[in-house]
Image 1 (tube, rainbow, N blue to C red):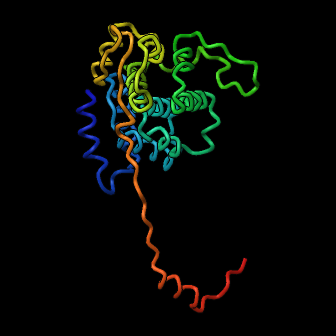
Image 2: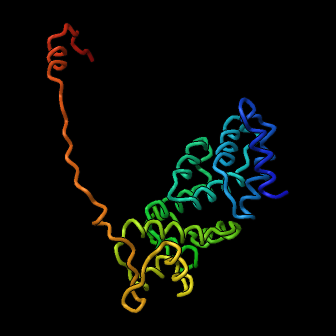
Image 3: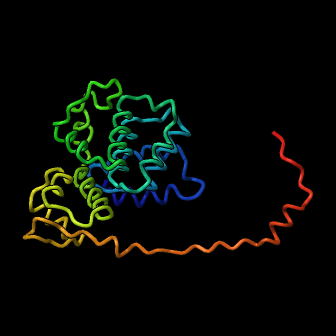
Length: 240
């Protein structure tokens, strides 16, 4: 069954008091799988199944949870990944597979795209630090591979970050931040985000952020009569 059909049926099934009916778990899991294969997303459905796993621990399926977490990473910079983590019971967080996704999420949330692309392309070299999060970096590529559209989603996320942090960006740097994207891919994304070419196409003008910065005078007015009333009122002292 297609994602659209599952989505429509589920939204009818999880309305009102029936939202956390444990009988919905199987259909919700099927919908999450359809999201993965069809590159779709529904925030309400992914958060609902996580809550149902909390309420019905016997139905918990870590494979589905991993898919949900990865799907929420695909919609960064939204807060869905953080919300999803909060809906996983603490006794589940020690799972090695989940830890890998949390560490990957930390890399993306910090906009460390250089490390992300090294992990994806198999060129990441683990450090000797005992706290090294990616001791087996090849596992990250395996986790991501089934997620249709994952790399494209991260490229779009990177472009959103670039849009708010760069005024001008060299084409070579842009390509690296997008995972060594081809000239065709870079040009297509630049056009989508309305970046203008400069210097024979070697530089993109992103935005003039200075024009958007406006000073604001904040005038705080204190009603002294109210302050005086508080100071003279018969309020008992605080005790600790």
